[in-house]
Image (cartoon, rainbow, N blue to C red):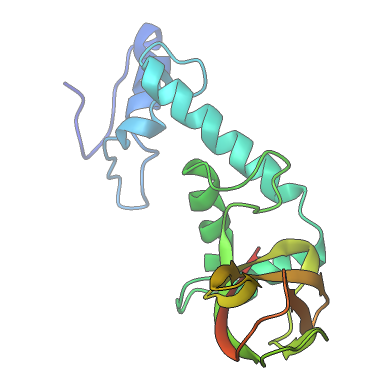
Amino acid sequence: MAKISGTQSIPAECKTQYDGAITPSTPDNIVRNRYPWRKPGKQLNGSHVTTLEKAQRTRWIESVAKFKKQDSATRARWYSARPISPAPLYYYNYFILSSLKGNVEVNGLGGGVIKDINHYTFAMTGGQTAPVTIAVDTVDPSKAICFFFGAGWAEVGSGVGVAVYPYLISMNSTQLIVNCSMTPAESAQFGVSLIEYI
């Protein structure tokens, strides 16, 4: 066993192994055992690296490569959507964690990570045929989808009614244009959830 303080006397044939297992000497002539993952056997292609460790390292390297492909605007979206943290670089951790969990879509643009969710309501009056404009918080329409809730009804025959559902005509950064599949017979209230992804 190597000494942990004082003058070291290491045989030449053991010097490489010693340097790999022990940290350089401090000014006080103290050396310490290296952390396991800092030892040569645990480095890239080392003899002590397990198959699972190799797989995890590969996933990590792929995540880092995806982050490097992000332009400034996309990185800004990750920054604004990051969980609350005092660390300014936590948005980077958020990206890496999302990637490791498989939530960053194949092009590395964050398609599976939600940036924001907002809910809105709107009404259609009986007999209304004109579309409804819904003001929404600013979103990137290329990264957003919406889900509608609720239904009105329309009479298609004597005593025969069918459900009337809302649908999206168009979306821009500040509004949704919505209409109904048929003219509602009476006023109806609807809801819409707008989900924006990173």
